[in-house]
Length: 322
Ligand code: DP6
Image (cartoon, rainbow, N blue to C red; front, side, top):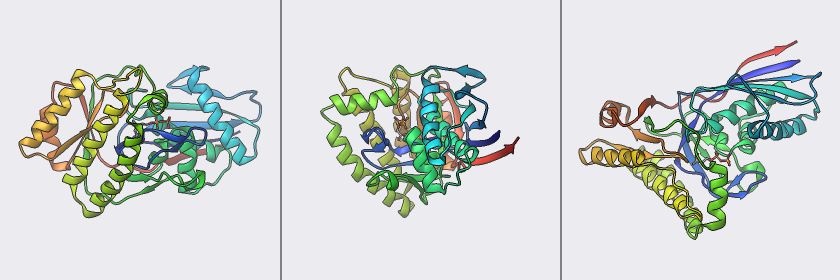
């Protein structure tokens, strides 16, 4: 038996990934830009077992055989193919972020799994190859391999679509956890519906490609205000796009909208703060580290808050041969 343990952190996109041009290879319609957080890690141990007659998934201490287990087995099939192995594995994983609440648990989950599984199966992948592998599990996971800020390139094909580090100004995020229950429509299903039914999808793809270039430039210039404005506009465009599906999907709740309004009021009072939200009701506020107290004060009473700074790369924390 060989086992490997890895940790990875969630990331929050400033320029969102929403839409695939190839769902088998999980190639995105556009590139995206994110910050990996220093909170809410996922820890995953993969044990390759000669004697096992199937993969086993233990998620937060509970043995699973439903959807998540099938997704993990499909992912392990990719790793086995790369490693030339036909052995099964036991995967034990635990999140410290509420699962499926729109707080990127699939990003930290598949980043940790990519690293632990590749090590347990004896693969020695460089960072771009790991990012590509994580991408196959969940697109946003490609970015959780990278510390701090990352750009995931749309790429031309499987070999060129991976995330890379990006220098960015000093920033913090205040995570407002509006709801912790599972979201009603998964981001995967919502993306599929968007592509099939929204008349705005093409405009989203075209404008987001331009938005990404502008965001990369704002990072290079160290221009926090410009990056913040880009972040909020891009998030609201994504949510407008999602609401334009048929049947429509709306992830933001009245409390989420109230948070966007309070952040706008903060800006009126001179504090640099900009809101974003993934495919769920939680809102994340981008701000300068010095302005975190002003942001938390403005949001107090609306939601449970957590403060994040740029976090570490996905890392191997243990290996064992038995
Ligand atoms: C709204 O990475 O979860 O968080 O590739 O289908 O697994 P799949 O999708 P996923 O989608 C994330 C969408 C988002 C935006 C983002 O993180 O860029």
